[in-house]
Image (cartoon, rainbow, N blue to C red; front, side, top):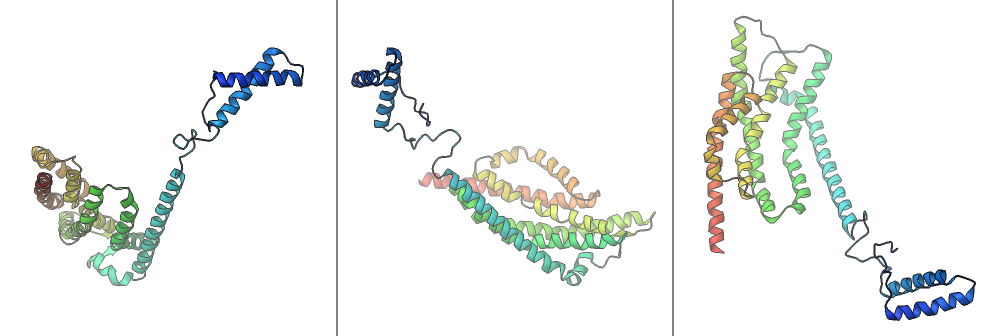
Length: 307
C-alpha cells in the first residue's frame, strides 16, 4: 500500500496484463513456484512499476499525510509562538523596569496615595504587601501604553482590514478613557465615599484604618471605574462588526441601566454615594455610545451608497 494513501488498483490494464504474463513466465523459469503464486507476484510487481511510472510513489502536495502539517504550516505556528514569546518578554521587561523605578521612589508618590490619612499596620509583612501592591498597580498604569503597543503588534497580522483599522484608530481613545476613569475614581469617587463611610461609622466606633484595607478600597474605587469607562469603545467595536446597532441599544436601554446599576454596586464600596457617582457617568457614556454607533452606521451607509 502506498504510504501516502494512494492505494494501487487491483485491476490491470491490457498493457499491464501482457507485462504481468511475461513476468509470470520469468518467475516460473527462475524457480519452482506454483502457478497461482507466480501470478500473484507478477501482478504485484507490475502494479508497483505502473504506479511508480505514474508518480504515485511521491506524496501529492495538496493532500499531505494524516497528522502531518502542510508545507509552511509548521513554520507558521513556530513564527506565531516566536512572536508571542517576544511580545511577552518585551511586556514583562517593561513592566519590571517600571515596577523597579516606582518601588525605588516610594517616598515620592506615597503621600499622593495616602492623601494624608492616618494608617496603621497590623504586622511586619503588611508594609511589604502595601508597597508591592501599590507599586505594581502604578507600574501597570504607567506601562499600559507600551503593553498595548506590544499586544497590537502581535495581533495585527491576524486581523482583517476593518478590525485592524478600528483598533489602530481607537487605541489612543481606549487609553485616554481608561486613564480618565481611573482619575475620576481617584479624585471624586474615592475621597467622597471614603469620608462618607468614615463619618457613618465615627458615631459608634473608634476609626482605625489599616494600610491593607485602605489599599483595597483605593483600588476598588479606581481600577474598575477605568474599565467601565471603556463602554463607548466596546459599543463601537461591536457595531463595526455588525453585532450591535443603535436601535438595539435604544430598545434595551431600561435593562441596560439596570445592568449598569448592578455592576456599579458590585465594583464600588457598599454605599449609595459611590454607586450613584459611578452610575451617573456610566449612563452618560451609554447615551454617548448610542450616538457614536448611530454616527458610525450613517458613515457606513454613506460609504456604501458612494460605492
